Length: 422
Image (cartoon, rainbow, N blue to C red; front, top):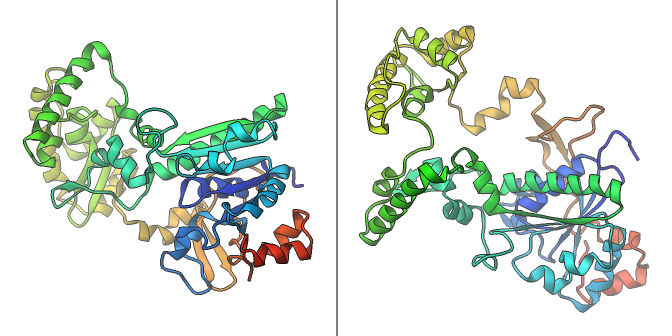
């Protein structure tokens, strides 16, 4: 056991697919945990998304490194001894089954806790475990739509809100689950008892909007009630999404929206500027040769008119120079600003390279594959990039052997299609 690795000697069994649970398990693996990923006999569905030579996919590689994989038909009556053997030596079990399936398989916390009191059981649901939507299935896009995150991100295509490329709720949920599992393991060190960690995509999407998720009831309550009434009326009348969106005021002030916290077109590019403090705002105005002498208080409509006009003047000045020229000025004066870039450009970004944000993964079939490095650092190389998960079904015999099954039993599992091997 390497004492510098925070999850060294921790055994994790992952019953997960898609994003949230697999990425959480990858984070634990990067911290030294031994992770066995349980897959259906067909494999995690993301293995089918544009396969690369050797059978891996970009999606699979992005969140399944540092693990070993065991195909297992959980519904097969002969799968139970394999599951029991896995649970008997596990410290952590992770699941993201559709509602009711964990209970059907006996992999919910209520079923596991009496048998394995030191076990930490982490689970992900779409909408939480209670309430009218608890039994509904949901994916990132559906949750983004349901929670306001999609609307708040502001992307519109053909007049309707659209999801961007980033599955924000999934990854925030994965990080939340990893934090919860870590907390439960820390508590187990003190108490000797495991516990249940629950995370929901819906909560993750709300966390992404945390700045807007505050309501002062005496001030905002009546306003929010009016807005809900207007939206209901507009939907009944078939009004467009853009019209509906216009009725919902931003959590940001007009000064932020129009001037200090936004993007600007330059002579050749687009630059994002974020001047939140009064000092930075004064510096930004000084750099542009302008003054903000408008009202600091007043009704929103008055502030909106003033800052819309000031924003237009800022736009004219910003358009007079290139992004590179503005960056030099901003950097010299301490104004936070950067040119807008596409994610594909970050693979070769000097700043990302200097900080080791990417890792060149040696793949046995594909050669060098550039992936994200572990998102946190711990001294002593506590978190290390994981190797590619071995080819699907290639570890079956080895894992079942480690679980205590002899060669004849393993052959029978394969003949009965409890598992599969290559």
